Length: 418
Image 1 (cartoon, rainbow, N blue to C red):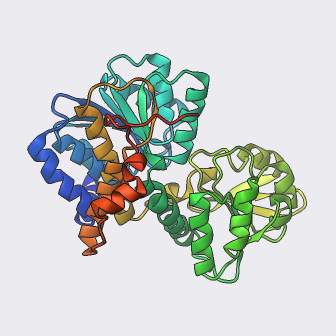
Image 2: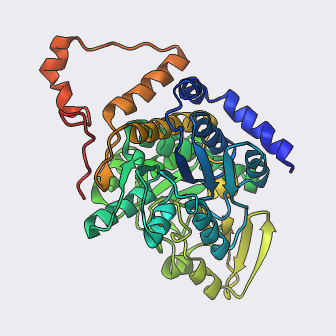
Image 3: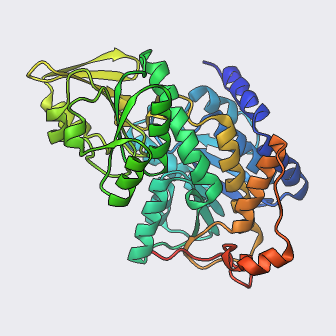
């Protein structure tokens, strides 16, 4: 497709992102990023293009690369690259070396602020030095986990905001966004019925909750696998079967991983899987389904549909892998619904503005100030025409609201302890 097709995709997304349009008016008037350079590593498609253009309209010089080798949509990247003030360094299907090169190219801009999706940009930044960076934000569960690991090691050298942990992010993006977009990608890629199938969901975090909920809504019989006993009880009380992967995969028609961990479906589970099972990953990195073990066990492989490779084992069983084990909802789909990303990206943009306009913070991992989180929620309610009650001063005092606002008494954000 051409960049004209990409431009139409961007226009469609923009027409369905009222929060970003509301902020565009503010940012264009206030120019909070004037004189700033912002580097983004993100799944580059129409909705993220709208975010990049919002930051540009706020005065920033924007540099963009992908956060996954298979999630960049070339027509959108081409359309975005034609916009003044935006420098694009991304292409669909890049090698690991090219992917790393593109990360380096956006960092060559010497950014003041960064926006990361998964943590690769932060890692590349620390490898080359962090001079001049005011801070940034991370929107994924995996990325925040990597930041927490740096906090534990004492190696996080810039202030980063855990946007993923904000309520207007994980409650909607992870649950409803992942829940719908995973099945959007599955349906368009397979043309198969979900009703009546045995679906195994690995992991019952917010993403796994959404995937399991939507699978049940489509008529599947759902089993959850977990290592956390509390989440396992939660899944059970939510009405799902719970079993170890080694047992659940024996009857599974579809397996979806959403744990953020390695080798969730590896050699032993593959040996137990029934023929015809579809394996897909909804975690950020392609480590949850061991493609290495699958390839080693197979006597042959072939593409059976775009994005689906069938591996034939010596005993005749055939296992189908979707999107090479990469993030299925973006590798084989358009990612989260537009309205969901409108919420998440509004929070990202406001967090970056907060960083740009305040005194520099010490290195560390910070919670998004509750006031920003609630402002996004209130803006969303306004676009829906929904009103809500407001606490009186007496009620606020009674509940001690000031103590749970996500900021200390002097207005500084609270650091997240590892």
